[in-house]
Image 1: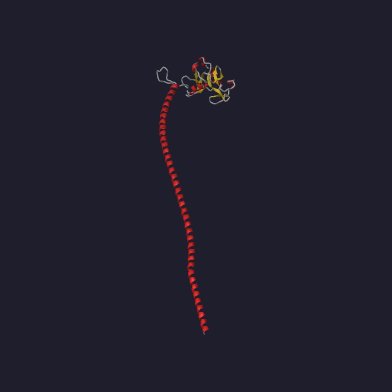
Image 2: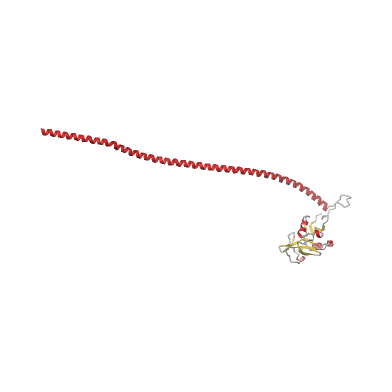
Length: 281
């Protein structure tokens, strides 16, 4: 019995130790569980913080990019507005310049209109004067002045008629004689030109008339050398080569002398013969 009692006591002690050990293990497990949970929560919070930080950085980058884009748009708008303002200023300036030019052109137009009106009036008066001069020149009044009757001629006073033309023989004294160019200028001032001779009959008239008795020995006619050829002032070449046998040399012009034509320097001074069409009565 004593042994049984000791055995039971020993079993009881072992049982109590086993229970104590289980309680101790449970306490340790209980003590370890909060730490593990805390660690898990810490890791979870750390991951969450990392995710939040990542999104914050992304949001910050997007915000910065948006700000840059907005600033870029503002800069472009300001640049375009500045350019448009400058262009508008330039257009206004050009418009003012055009308005000024328009005013100047209007003034010039008015002045030209007045000048044209004055010229038209002067031209009309000149035409009337020329018409009256033509009447007096071609249809002079009777010299006896007994009446106002007029007698019209195909050539004006001082001109000689021949065939269908009129000729003015300029018997200038040596101081008043002219070069070929000067003589032609005198003829054009009389609405004529230096004489162009078309045929032998006209040549005989020009070279064989009685005005040689005036003392002049040569008269300019409308013939000179141009480009190595003898040319009349109307642009035609000399076809009667026998009229002047001298080879054409630049600076040479033709004069009418007694019964022939002669080549001399265009700078010589001589009398001259003008020619124009006669009136048809």
